[in-house]
Every structure is written in C-alpha cells, then in structure tokens.
Length: 262
Image (tube, rainbow, N blue to C red; front, top):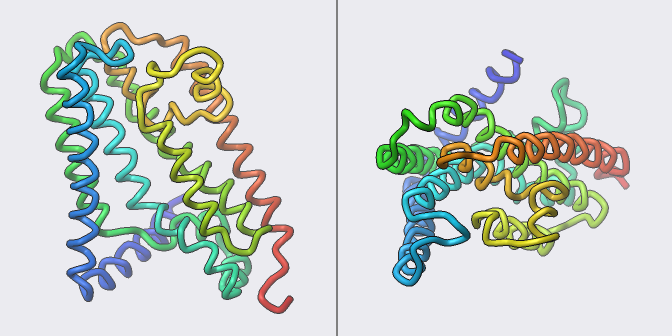
C-alpha cells in the first residue's frame, strides 16, 4: 500500500511541474470549476425562492448536500477524471501496452496516472464551503453521522470511479469512447441531485442498483437531522458490490485488449 502511495506522490509532483509550465491552463481549470460551483448554488437559491424545501430538504441541509457534492466531485477531478478522458487515447496509441507490463496494478495506473493540480485547488475551495455549511447547524446533534461521514465520502468517490471503470472497459471493446464518455457525464447528473427528488422504482435504482445516490445524497444524509441509518447501510453495501462488479468488468475487458501490434 505504501508503495502505491509513493508512486502516486511521484505522479503528483510530475503533474505539478507540468502545470506550472502552463499557468494559464491551471488558472482556467480552477476558474471553470468555481463557475460550476456557483451555477449549482444559484440554481438551488432560485428554487428556494419558490419553496421552503426541495424533496423534503431545507436550505441549510441543501448546502450540506452541495458541499458534499463539491468535495467528492473535486476529489474525483483531482485523482481520476483526467485519466478517464485520456484512456481511449491509450488504446488507440497502444500506450496501454506499457500499463499492462508494469509491475503495478493496471487499474491503479489507468485511474491515477495523471492527477489534476488545478482541481486540487478546487478541492480546498469545496472543503471550505462544506465547513461553512456545517457551521450553520448544531453539530452536537449530528456527531454520530459525522464520525462515519468520511468513510461514505470515500465510498462516494469510489462509486464515481467505478462508473468510470465500466466505461473505460467499454472503450476497450469500442476502441474509442469519446461519445460514451459524455453519456457517463449525463448519467452522473442524476447523482448530482438529492435522491429525495426522485420517487418510486427510479429512486430505488439510484440507491441500490446503479448507486449514483452514493455520490453525494447518501453521505450528506449522515449530516442531516435524524438520518435513516438503515437506508444508508443498505445502499452502502450495494455500493460496495457495485464497485467490485465494475472492477471485475474492467479486468475482464483488459483480457480482450489486443494490443498495439494487432
């Protein structure tokens, strides 16, 4: 485990050096993410002008949800997102061959090779907003949820990565998945809204089958008043099963990779 952390740290320092050579790209990436945060906040601020709650969530708890979403999304952008978009090029160029022969996990190399330094700055911004949101509620009443909240934040990040692994696996078969990548972006949008705005069968699918609600809704629920621990635990277990299934699918897809020489 320590070997992988050391390896990732070398990836991080390498990416930092590269980003410092192109400072305007670094600034543009930071600015775009800040604008995205502002758009999400403004959207819900407008909606709360017309209703006291949205999906049973008040404005204060909605800020906690958004803070959770921003943190998990920024972690994903920092750690894995760039690698996801670059993966089809690895297949087309044959560079994936070198990932397969290295003495480390191909899943690790494919998902974490290129950290995004600009998004790391956004992560600090997202954490600051989450701390501000939590300061608006009586934390003493929410300590039990707060203790396991970090675990579910990591689980939400893992679920986002799991969806990316599935589409990376699909790109092995299609040899290029630029359009498929944007399909995933559209699917992720369902997880970027509170799960309580969905009803019936569709909500159950987002909680237990394709657990997009774990991206932000379920972790944020831990910090709401009177959280439903039964729902949180059951969706968490389904999320773990989904992560394992996505990992197995990706490793299966790699066995079908024919290499640059084919």
